[in-house]
Length: 108
Length: 108
DNA sequence: ACTTACGGTAAGTCATGTCTTACGCAAATA
DNA sequence: TATTTGCGTAAGACATGACTTACCGTAAGT
Image 1 (cartoon, each protein chain N blue to C red):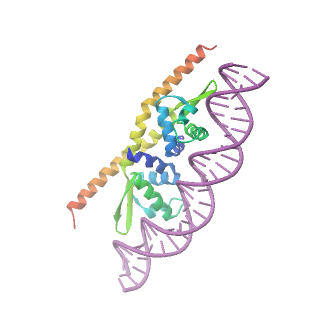
Image 2 (cartoon, protein in one colour):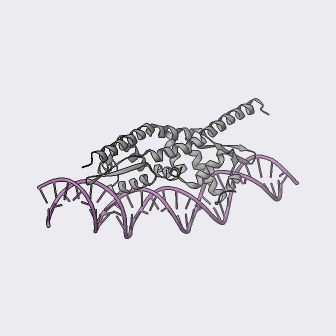
Image 3 (cartoon, rainbow over the protein chains, first blue to last red):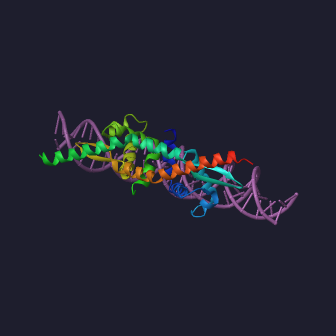
């Protein structure tokens, strides 16, 4: 839950979503991520920092490289936040549909 | 899925998240939403426009007022996007845990 | 020890986003 | 018809955010 706030902000940026989607295919270093994106390598580093703070990725040193991979913490926090509203949303939708039906049949 | 992109951007803003959470409690008009937030009513209108474009809320006229409520479309799109990575994230996490265990027991 | 490869951070620029006040339109009320 | 209430939009100020280049530290290879 604590991660949910920053996770939404993190995934709001299209470049960061691309980084995240790429990491879903498997771990990768910064250089690998940068070549496949239309931005510079430092930009990717900055994006990774934000993704990491949101609990969406984790990293580990591997020689001179730094390998990033998906972290389920942030993802789980977002799911929990969304699920909190899912039932409510469906109820609201059902109620709205019924309201519309009543309107059309009890038309003035 | 089409809504997923804009839905993440929409919920990235804390004020919009508060509006959304308030609507989860039940439908409300713009004035009602504005008094309970530290921003002006026009600001709330602008936020609602963004939430609506993201498929997160819907609105209907009710006399001179305009009642907003949660729309499951955007929420569903986000869930679908997240679920797409959920299994992958858990696998990645499990693999990382195992890798760590191997590292500590095969220590140099 | 020197070089090469990799990556994080600093500083600055430019684009986006969020807010405000001012205004105009539509529906209900007197 | 005149007034009130509720909303949306326009215009502009201000803060945030995303990118660039330049730089420095660290780990491996020669």
